[in-house]
Image (tube, rainbow, N blue to C red; front, side, top):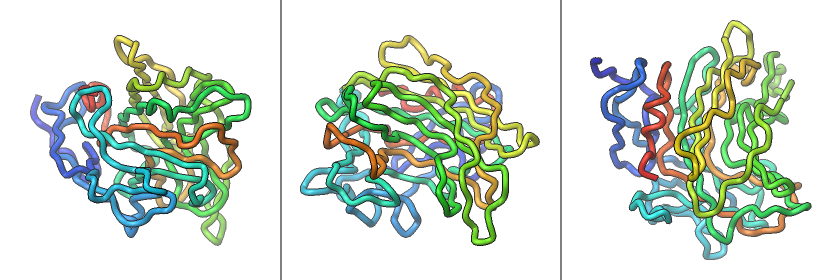
Amino acid sequence: MSQILVPKFMGIISRSGRPFALGAPVGGGGGGGSPINTVLSSSASGLAVSNNSGSYNGTAGTQKSFGGNIVLGPFSDPGGSGIIVDLHRVYQTQTPISGGIRSEILWDGAAPLTPGVESWLQFCVRIKSGEGFPFSATDDEMLLFQSHTPASGSTQPDLALFMYGQSGNMRWRVAYQTSPPAGDGSTTTEGNPWITPGESIPTADTWCKFIIQHRAGYLAGHNPLINIWRKYSTDADYVQIVTNYTGFNTYNNPSPSYWRKGLYRYTGANWTTSPVGIYYDQNLYYQQGSNLYLSAKACNSGL
């Protein structure tokens, strides 16, 4: 199979400036190509970190803090791989951004959910010991990963991973709007069904990995599709937890939604633990194309 060059906005989105190559394409549809080395800045809508501004490029010199504590910054993998990962952390006393306390990195424009276009993502999370999300009857939800529409208005994420203290579970939900925005450009959420039952929150100090196959769509003609695989540290391989979900999964908006990685705790949530800290891989795998499961799987295989 010949090497296939990956067009703009495909491949690994990296903030560290270090090359990350998957090698020869696998799976029969694309793969390989050069990574996009992106320095995310507030002027480019690259960060949403409470009490902070400016840019972050995956180095200690650009890390973000609150009260002398790091809320976004690089650390060596606690699992001992030697790979540099990012710690995202939120404190109850931080200042909300757009309805909640956040420690998020986002790719507005660089990782679009274009209707009718298939894309693949892979990311990893690892709950920090002593800063997890314990079972509690009063500890409400937070988000670990989501997409976001650029349209104004009261909306839910097109696709999001939620974590719950009340049940000790996590699960995925979609949202969509089939009608175009109002005259002022605003929109609302038409529907937002759950697409997975509750699964156990990963054990602290272990990596949990996800692969997403996503074809955005708010019309039947877009052929919307979502498949999700999850791998706990105790799993021998990835387990498929969403199989061929074909419901609507994005917003009817001139500009497509985009991906955000990190923590979001909405303002009305109850807290029993502060801070909450979760490590993420520094590279978000994002690639448009088909049959890219093996390429996505190869990303962050060292964690």
